[in-house]
Image (cartoon, one colour):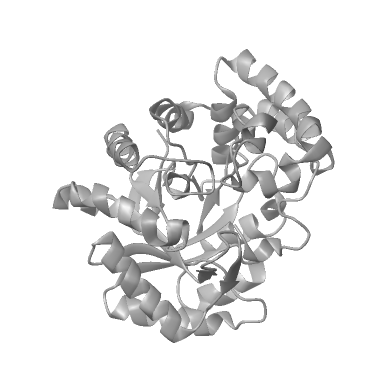
Length: 333
């Protein structure tokens, strides 16, 4: 079991991304989701990741249902991570804007505390930094929240290495959350090395490529989603890109079978092997995958296997961008 420090607590390296329990990846059931959150805790999960924009507050309320049924002792072992800075459009679920203002962020924190029904947030992220916005203004606001006892530590999402370094000089940054998986590896160039240099934890979201690397996502599933599945709008899941990327899954499966593990476990264990600073937060709504993902921490890959995976998933072998061209990938999740 890989235990690592995050936000002042020593916890397993794998946490639970809760977004899909509210929206973006098809339908879900609240009662089943709360039950799954309890199952996660019993398995050993201690890091639960949400945001105020997920389900327009619904996801935080869902997590609150779980937290309210835990003891004070259990709560002290848990890291509750949430985020603010993305504003949802009331009429279009996929339309968003950004607000990094002091008054907005302070109110957003208050609202999150109320929805979560907790006294403090362990790890509070700026969900996105507006291009051109001075990160010092944001960090100053978060420092006020720390002084007020409303948050314990500060996190940033998807900022570049220079911004992270500047922010960390103002106040220690506990974590940087960025997309990272076998088929999304841009952070390896400068962001991950900067995290290691500064001692900042890297929390990898979508470590299974939004489910693609599990092999469970099909074109039929996406075509029948009635606009409820974000992936139906993403280039990597559309047109010929889906089939071309699918060829990588064949090779991923060959390697996984040779090790007698699942594709998911192989993909997750590869990330964990990349750095001692990495935590991962795959999401799921099924007990089987919850346990399977958690057990990926027990897998030790050889350097040869890691190198083979990186050859298979070389950037030139990935078809399609992370997001549509009309969307700025540095500002969206």
